[in-house]
Length: 253
Image 1 (cartoon, helix red, strand yellow):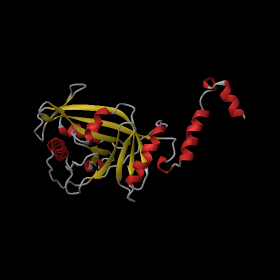
Image 2 (cartoon, one colour):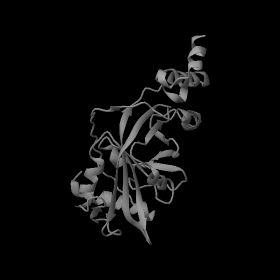
Image 3 (cartoon, one colour):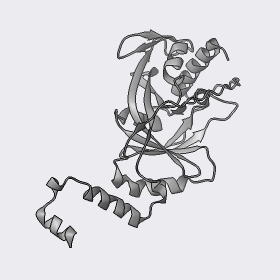
Image 4 (spheres, helix red, strand yellow):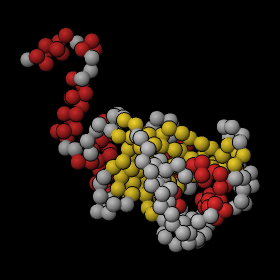
C-alpha cells in the first residue's frame, strides 16, 4: 500500500465521517506490531464498578473482537467493526462507535464517531482520563489519555485537503496527518469531526491514549463481597495520621 493511497484514503474517510456518505475501498492489509513500554497505574474509580460490571455483562458475546468502551463519569458505548469491503464506514447508531480497520494495520486501535452522535463525547475527555476497552469475551484493556490534537481542514470538502494543527499552526498533508496520528502503534485513538458554523467537516479532533497496567482485578468478575473488601483494604492503607484514635481502637478490637 503506497503512501499516496493512504493519504487519499484517510482524507476520504475524514470527509465521509462529516457527510455521512459511505465510500467503498478494498485496500491491501499490512499488519504492523510493536510493544513499547507501558505505564503502571491503579484504576482509581472504584465507585464506577457498579456501573461497569453490568456494562461488561451486556457486551459479552463470546468473541474476542472489541465490543465496547467505558470512560467513568463520561460514557459507555458499544463498538462495532467496519465491514471488510467498506473501510470508510462509520456507524450512525446511537451510543455506538466504529473500529477503524485501517488503524489496525499499524497496531493502533482507532475508534470513529460522528460529532452529532457518540463522537460528541470525545470533546469532554481530558488528559489523564482513564478508559477501558472491553472485548466480547469479557476481557479488558486499560488506557489513559495523554494527548488531544485538533486540526482545521483547509479545504473541508476536498479529499486531498491539507490540515492546520490548531496548537502550532503547522500545516500537514493528509498523508503526514495519518502518519502522525495512527502510525505510532500500540495506542488508542478516538476520532471525530469539529463542526464550525455551517461547515460540518471544518476540523478533526484526535484523543490519543496509551495502554496502562492496573492493580485492580478483572472487575467484571468481582462479587460485591470482593468489591467491598477492596474498598476496605484501601481504607486500611491510608496513612495513620489520617485516622481518628477511636477508629484505631475499633480496629484493634
